[in-house]
Image (cartoon, rainbow, N blue to C red; front, side, top):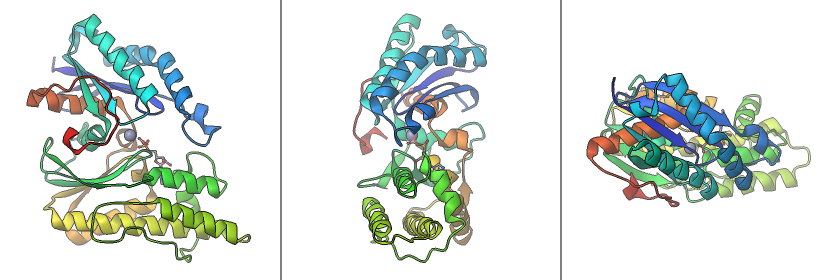
Length: 330
Ligand code: KG4
Ligand code: ZN
């Protein structure tokens, strides 16, 4: 049997556990979602998230082992998200992994959640052609990175305030849409005209993002315009976000020799982003790689795959909390 790693992810509101082999084949991936718990609050309620992780974590571990058809003794190691994320949620995963490691006599490796996302595109089909430029746009994070290979990863830039997913969710709430707002804003924008000149934040030639000003501009526009056409507001907002993402991605692809461009994170599901990225890659002669949504959103498999990288490199990252985004941790 090939080496197997158990990956545990509890940084936000999903309890996710998976079994992955050294080639990135996923033997099982179980995600216990808390979406219904948090929908009433219009965002993740940290204390409830931690409590639900406590209830869900062991059944989810058992289910992942059962679906993979293996026993704990078959595992080579356990990978667990060490951050960034909600501290109460992270601690549930870290303590569980540490206890299982002691009980099963397996090494436990702490994984940067962002590194997991960056590696997610290589799950199963090994889609990434290196060197690659990668755009991560999720509910919690937005960044651009350059990957010479699986383990040589350089952070180019990240958001200074809200992540792209977060700003979609907040604008969704302003427009009276359900949570999460991203998919609904996407749909509504398709029916409107991008005719409102919202600001395009930080359009200088760098890789930093900032979206809170755009969010405030939408809020101000809605307050000042009682008869606003909501579909036009959505379309104009999405257009502003897309222009920023495409400009920064184009710059990254031109400055860093890349054979492929990857987009990971929940916002990779956005229909306009997918179209714009396809156009950009066609123009630049770069391969576009969009992993399926199940690997793009939070999952345990990406954490397990990142743990294999550390095993191969002989690096041991302890299962201790890591709260800040740190370039060195890549
Ligand atoms: O990757 P993910 O599950 O979150 C984190 O790991 O942080 O992504 C969830 C985010 C939410 O903010 C959601 O609104 C957004 O992805 N999202 C979208 C779309 N589908 C999901 N945003 C824009 N357009 C979409 N179609
Ligand atoms: Zn994530």
